[in-house]
Image (cartoon, rainbow, N blue to C red; front, side):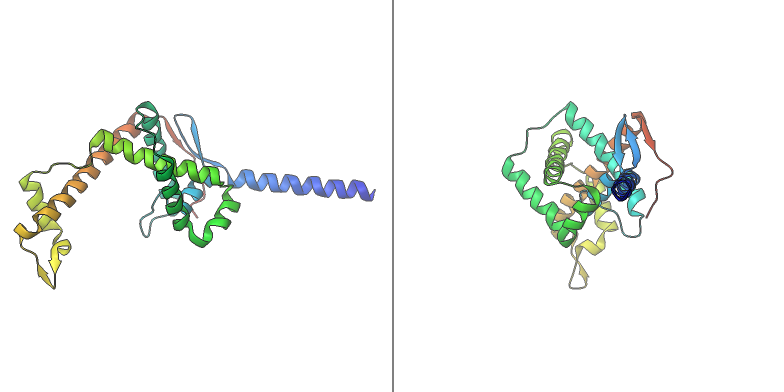
Length: 209
């Protein structure tokens, strides 16, 4: 009887743990049938793979960013850029681990994150960046009107010693930053177009904390 009781306790404990893991790893969204789980989002947040603006809900915002990431990875699969070198992946792995910092071990335990998955995330990051450079270029040309508008609307970026840097002096930096912003706008619109054509389902019952 003691043996049976002990065996029942072990079984009950195993079921409880399994249920807890299933609850933690619930599917929060699907993108073209690909499942994104809660632990995927938590791991990406912990490693800094996705960034949440201050004040935003981390899970809700994280889910949206993971959807975008999956759409990007699907495009990378269709039109793959050159494979990143092992050295570049090593450096990116180090960056991810630095972002996780002292929380890395706890993050790995709570999400099932492994060294292999961290390396896969690092490789995916590099492939996404290379793909975007391949598709949209590393720089985007802006018109003189766009340049002047950027300078006017971002005066704080061109202030030195309490005074505004003259436009002629600030022009190279303003052109670089205006081009970067223009590139971001183009990519954001392209992502919205991808979303509009994709089969995306979000689980409305996911906890946001």
